[in-house]
Image (spheres, rainbow, N blue to C red):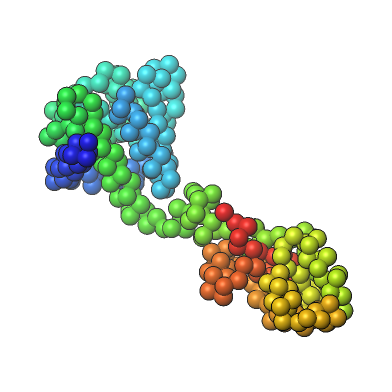
Length: 311
C-alpha cells in the first residue's frame, strides 16, 4: 500500500511540474482581467470540476476577490440571473467539451461577460471561445484505469490557487485584510480581538485590605477566578492568587492572624482595554502568569483576563 501511495504522489507531483512549465502570458492576462473586474468572479464547473471550482471560489472570496460558484445545470433554471454584466466568469472543464458548461457561453457573449477557461484541451470548443485560456493538461492521471480525475483535478485546484495568490499580490492583500474575512479564526483573533472583547467584567472579586483571612478565602471561592483584587477599581493595592494562598499556608503557621496584605503581590501587571489579545497573551507567557488586570483610560480596573479560559 505504501508503494501505491508513493506512486500517486510521484505522478501528481510530476503532473504539477508539467503544468507549471506551461504557464504563459495567458496566466498574467487572466489575473489582470480578474483584477480589473468591477463585479465578482463567477466559477462554474460540472462534476469533479465543480467540486474543485467550489474550493477555488471559496479561496478567492477569502483572499479579497468576491466570488461565488454557480452550478451549470442550475444556470438554465434561473441561476443565470446571478451573473451581472460587470462580472467575470471562470468555466472549468478538463475536456473542454462538457455540454452543460458550453451551453453557458452564448449567454455570456450576449451579456458581454469575459470568461476564463481552465481546461486540459486548448483546442476544445471552450478554449477557442474563451477570452483567456489556462491549460491544466497532464500527462497521466494517478488513477490506474486512467478514468477517475486525479492528477487533472489537482492541477486545476493548484491553478486556481496560483491565480488567487497572484491576485493577493496584485491587491497588496495583507494579514490584516485576511483577518477581517476570518474574524473567527486564529489570525483574526490575533490581529483584531482586544482584551476588552474577552475579559470578565461582572462581579469582579474586590476585597478590602483590612478583610480577615476567612473573608479572603470566602471571597476567592465566590469569585471563581482563583484570585482576589485587594482595594477598589480606582485604587488597586494588590492581588492575591490561590498560588499566593498556598505558599502562605506553607510559610506562615499563623496565617489566619496575618493581615491579608502580607500575602498579596503589591505590583500586579495591568494592561489597557485596547491591548490586542495576542499581545496580552505573549506578556502572560513571558511573565509566567495566567491572570491580567484590565484598566480603562481612566486607570480604573474594568475587567480580568485569564489565558486558561480561552480556547
